[in-house]
Structures are given as C-alpha cells and as structure tokens.
Length: 288
Image (cartoon, rainbow, N blue to C red):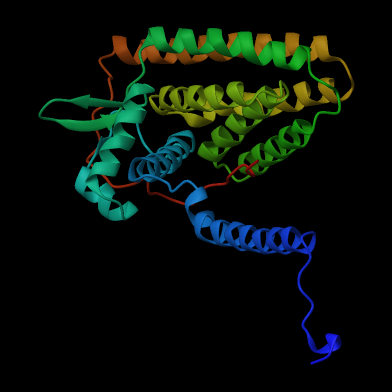
C-alpha cells in the first residue's frame, strides 16, 4: 500500500477546532429549544382575581354613566337578582361593583334592606361645589388655548342647544355634565379626570332630587356658550371668572330648592327596585 492510500491523520491543531464546532452547534440547539419551551411561560397569566377586578371596574363605570345620565334616581332600590341577570354577571361580581360604588358614595347599603342609590345631603352638595370651583376655575385659567379638550367643550355646547330645542331637559343636564368634564380635561391630568367623573355622578344625584329639570338646567345653556366664547377668544381670566360666578349661582339654586323640599317634608320616596335605568330616549352629549 502506497503512502497515498493511508488516510490522513488529524493533526493536533484540527481536533480542538472540531470539538469547538460541535460544542457550538449543541449550545445553539439548546438555546433554540430553551426559547421555544420557555416562551409561553414568560408571559404572566392573569389571575382570576385580576379578571374579576377588571370586570367589576367595567360594570362600575357603566353604572356611574347611568347615574350621570339620570337613569338611576336617588333612593332607588337596586335588585341584585334583576341586575345580575340584566348584566349577565355573577352575583359575586355584582357585589364587588356595589362595594366599589358604595365606597364612592354613589350607593348605600342597609342591613336587611339591600342596596339603593345614595341620596346626597346638603353638606355633600356644598362640598361638591367647593371642589368644583377649586378644580374647574384653575383648569380654565391655566389652560393651553389650543388644548384638544376645546372640541369636547364645543360638542357639549351644541348637544345642550339641540336638547333644549327638543325640550329634553334631562339631555340638557347630561350635555352640561359633559361641558364641565371637558373643562377639567383642560388640565391634562388623568387623575383629575377620574376624580371629577365620580364627583359629577354625585352631583347628578343631587339634581335628581329636584323635580323641575327645566328650571335647573335651562339658564346654563347660554352661560356655557358665553364661557366657551371667552375661552376661544383667549380671555382665560374672564372665562374663569364667569365660570366661578356660574358655579356660585348654580350652588345657590340647588341648595335653595333642596332646602325647600326638606322643609316641606318632600324627601323622595324610594322608587321600586329595578335592574337598570329605563325610560324614554334622550338627547345625549357626544362622548369623548
């Protein structure tokens, strides 16, 4: 056998390279396998309590909006069985919703009587207006003149005028709520927006105690127009001063009517238990 028939022996320098190459391939395969098997477990799975909380928050927000739109009356009893069926949710979840809204002062729980919509007191009405003046007037006085919330203000004013022309005074009240919510949005603070939305729900309950929504809401349609015109003209200080006068006037009217109802023994009776606010279709301010 010639020398050419003898297989070449691996030199000492080639063996380490081969071993390193094989080791690299093995490590690469292991990394791919690890990524494939570990990826599903890297994503946090929502716990049942998180899912329940998210659902409770969503339903609570729906009920707040019903209160803001005047679909729940102060003192109205809420049937747990009827509401859970209407909303297609378990009673445990509904009880969590009731707990959240009771903590916010929108509902009231009484032993052996169940849950009902809260009835605001004179003290709470005074406090609501105090907070409104502190937040709304500052938001308007310090606002950026081209803030996108101006569009929300315009939509609310137009909705209020439309509802007034249709004699839909509950709709005028809802549009007015939207206008003031838009004013707070001028501050560009999500915390203020959330807090003020809860405050408006309480205020709507106070409005619900008054039997004359036209008397309550009609004067403020044109006041909203004036405030918007001042703001769009860049007269922020004048707009804020007009808003302060507006809120003082509104507070006096609400307190005077409420006090007369109490002195006349006209505390509202609790309406029958219901599953949701029903009634005739109303004009609605366009949502944000």
